[in-house]
Image (cartoon, rainbow, N blue to C red; front, side, top):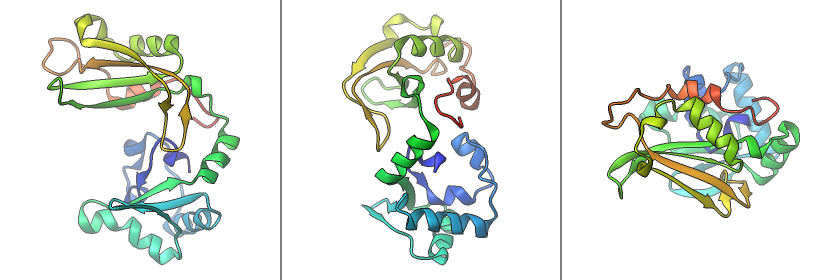
Length: 203
């Protein structure tokens, strides 16, 4: 359940050897049969559902054979079409167990901004002070960027995940330091993940 907290995941990821790099989480440590049985049980309890790219309807798994086929999608087609996600009940159970501290959670996204024609990094947190500290430790080259290329604003409300919303958060966006600028590149994503504050019990 943990790896579905921040976003729905392609089902085929669960069977991949590089799962650690994909989600920055420890391996589940289950054999294939144990993994199939676990997913089926979570689905039967109403904690996990699957959706497809073209149909957002949440569906329950009916058998381990069905799950086995879903996990093999990526190897057969190169790209899976089925996604696993928490239900509202699954999210409630995870919150009760993990006791997340949402003020410590930092969302980090990178992508191409068509309006600017450049790569942009976006960080969001309800705690501005924590966000500023993370910027200084995780993006050492930020101080060398033109201040006009750094934008702060406030989100009200903030859609933290597909199942969680908070009243307010601070957002900072800046042009990717490695996008044609003569500055040291930022630390690799997995290094920045290590620098992120621990925000729930098993993080």
